[in-house]
Length: 217
Image (tube, rainbow, N blue to C red):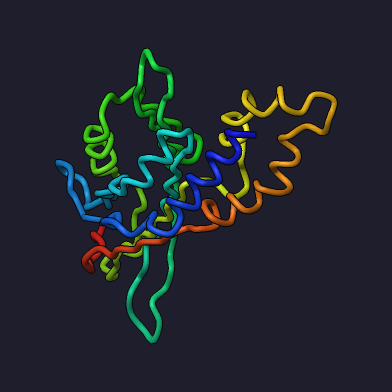
């Protein structure tokens, strides 16, 4: 059971100050390619800046970044939400002693981008800070618009404790021969606690682009 207590102590030590360092800064900018209308480009800096978050990653926890980009049309009494898109980025530290690296995967609709093994935290942060262009065009020419992006960051998905379960499985299994599967107990007992303290501790960040006028087409 030592591994179980190790992770509980780790969570108790890290949960309170987990987000006390520099917060992630998300932004959405308007960029233009040659001969094309402006498109939104989303980036995030300091996504993994917190030392406690880095410690959790080194102990097998994944970091999930969920992005939602919205297109709003201004005018009238209220602004109108015209369209939206969302995507997820998962960052996980590879614990293989012969190839320690950060793995980043981005899921957007049916598209999956695997960025492979990144050898340093600085390079991982630099990749996350790279602007990601998204196609979310306005529908009404000459109308005024702006983009709004919401980023949600969590150290562990509250609905999926598989990373934690796999990490503990090797140490817990020999200690419970002939008894109930420890993973079931973990999921029903301590798993709920960890889920509330990590997965349930979701932080949101938001940014808005400058207002612009849609091209006439």
